[in-house]
Length: 349
Image (cartoon, rainbow, N blue to C red; front, side, top):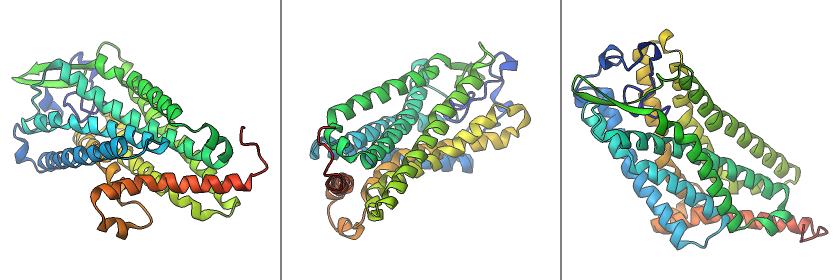
């Protein structure tokens, strides 16, 4: 991602080299062989991307089918369905990356797809983190104001919030449409981030994406879960934290997957003082680790829960439904118990 692809090599970084006025010869920085299969790292990442594509497409497809068509529409399924759609679209675009790597970093899909694939990558990043923030806030409000939540937490309002999150994500992903470009050099076409028109655009975009897509959401989520933990402990209802296990795992996975990528993106801003070879490898590995988040989400849906052994014996579809439905059922029980404790409160707050 920044821009999910190198500026001189799609999908793995963002070297802009404003001082050149145009992308420098690729070999002066990356020194890639024309045959990916002769390089261990390139081959390994290619295989990893293929695995991510297959598992992510199948896993998120099942989540979309179950949460969209097989389960009753609730606020929880609305959150998970939107997350799965985001990850599914992301995985559907991975064949372009796989083909690009397999062909020795030669972009054959034209300018439109160069812009579109980068746009989709950032759309996935922002929509995923924004949805995780929304879910965290939703859980926090459910614990802090259970009576109010029972009266106002509706599927329609959740759908509106999801649409707003997607619109903001689209807006923040638009720089890819503006700055992605292609160039032909020595018979090879490269899809890159062309920041040469504005010397400050690269830094501005990189820092804003880091803040909006990582730092600020991280602190919001930490605050929400800290409030939840304190509330549960004060009410001596620590066992009620089990409904949050799936979301905690999803959030932790997201940040562990994206942290390496953001670290190397920021290091890239001072690429003149960095080892280009190490930076290029870091961007490659960091991007692949970030991609893995899209297939790990449905895995967590299935295998996180209190009774894994029982679900393991049931069908895959049953496990998916139970895993996603458990949080809703347990949260409902908690809200009911909290409402009983607050029985004196009005039910029309």
